[in-house]
Length: 166
Image 1 (cartoon, rainbow, N blue to C red):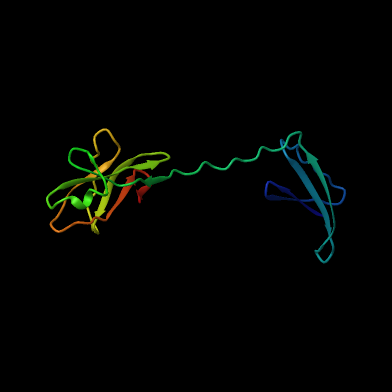
Image 2 (image 1 turned 180 degrees about the vertical axis):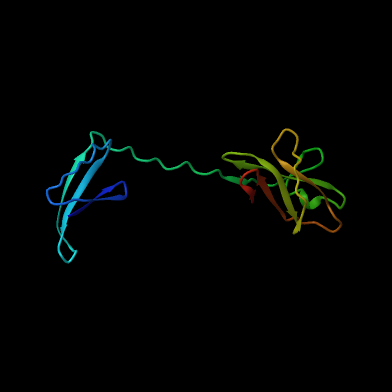
């Protein structure tokens, strides 16, 4: 006779002869169920019987693991060299030679940011690690070239353990 029981997803097997007994210790929580069945000479199962023993308390449900750290890039801002914010309406009025400081910050559930990089009008700029004083905004100072009246600014911020975030 062969018997099996299910215990938290594991099948335990115990081979016993007719008349032989065995014991399962008292469960600390939940229920232990023992299924007993007989195989025929064709090695197929006949009738199956079971016995179960419940603990005094139910098992505590397992809590899901905490989510991993996440990070994201926040909006890009534009400043003049005196740290006055430049609005989108003012950007087209800038002239060749004017300096703009494009800045970006990020938010993360844990860890920190160590650098940023900008793509301005399709041109990838060097990574920067300087910050606007008193903030966590990384910035890149950009000189307006001749003939440029529109801007396309993309930024990425680098998290020390998660890498680059858009």
